[in-house]
Image 1 (tube, rainbow, N blue to C red):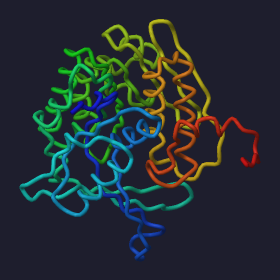
Image 2 (cartoon, rainbow, N blue to C red):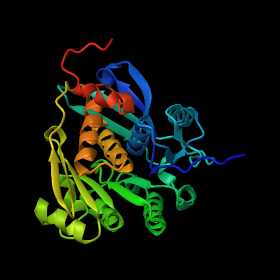
Image 3 (cartoon, helix red, strand yellow):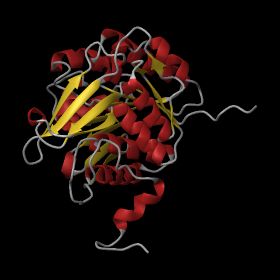
Image 4 (cartoon, one colour):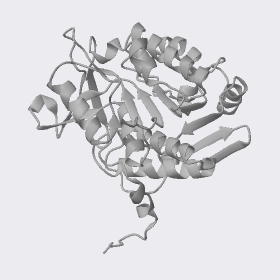
Amino acid sequence: MTSSPPLDVVTVGETMAALRATGPVRLGAPMRLSVAGAEANVAIGLARLGHRTGWVGRVGDDEFGALVLRTLRAEQVDVSHARVDTEGRPTGLLAREDRIADLVSVTYYRSGSAGSTLRSSDVLPALNPGVRILHLTGITPALSSEAAEAVHAAAARAGELGITVCLDVNYRARLWSPAEARDALLPLARLADVLVASADELDLVGEDSSLPEGEAIDALLAQGCGEVVITRGGDGASATTAQGTVSMIARRVPVVDVVGAGDAFVAGYLSGLLDGLDVEGRLHRATTTGAFAVTSRGDWEGLPTRRDLTLLDQPAGTTLR
């Protein structure tokens, strides 16, 4: 019996059941059930692009947990290191509603969830020398002290094994304060090889929060981070390495839903990294996957396959026959 090839990427975090309302919740609007979680979104995005990807986390022993695992398996994401809680803690839940214009409101029901009890013993067995990238976000350490310890232990082990550590800051104001986030994320950022953040998140991961953007990026590179990627929404993104900064504008597409666009961007960027693309090539793939995400509803449903990547290069109005 032959063993399975090692995973290219391991992602760690909480995946929840997601209820998406088609109108105001208080008026009893119909809801569509799916799953959501930044790390799972990235795992699905990478799997669709042909990379071997695994998700590590905990779900409740309930129907929502079964949905999470079934969905990830269906998207070819390895869940062999996922854990089903046996102590009665439920799978986390989020409810999302479109409010006015393009304003979206998301409410989380994840306090005391199975995912918030992630432990180092859940994560470390998934890391071995064959894994190429460990992807983490700043969401998971906000869930509990246990989860924060697990994420830090995973990053430290990855460094020992020569696994590239990617940290997406992904600050969530409803989970913790900037001061709490900074305390947890500063030591994690010191272990990151690739750091992804919006410009207003840099002060959460820099030793000197008063530095302007350019100097803050230089300071992160000086402390050992190999590349700092700054996302700017509709204005595109930039990536800075020791060789300099490369910027790229966003792909111009009709915007339907921006939720999940950042995770799609990260999936594209890491895919380019795995494929050996240069910084410009990584950003091009990242802005392409991000564009796919915003043209459809859902956190991950519209993410492209590898064959889809060239579709946005076709002239407007093209019919493929």
